[in-house]
Image (cartoon, rainbow, N blue to C red; front, side):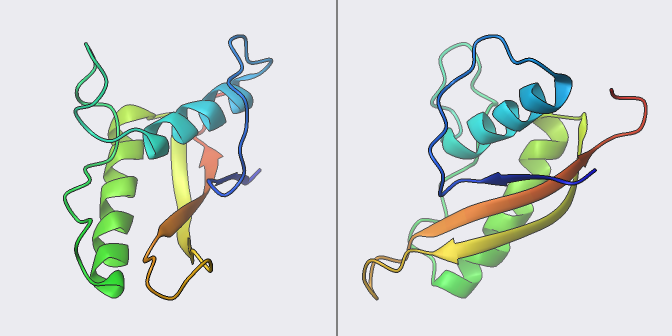
Length: 110
């Protein structure tokens, strides 16, 4: 089964996820929404934000690699299938990329 994490949607934190799929989904949302080195006692969680001033095509390419690497390292139960981005349509100069990650649970994870 393919699951999707769309960072355009706001989802409340669930302190007791009902299933492994819900737990992994919430963990991926946390990884994507946390700047690297910003979580006390867990400095390796999150996405590096050093690409903020890159042109959009360069930022998108670099961010794809960083998202893939972060999920692989920080949530090994997920197998990423696809990463796409939505550009913020609020204004032409905002330059905001919003990730959408499609993934499956790795075999043996139920």
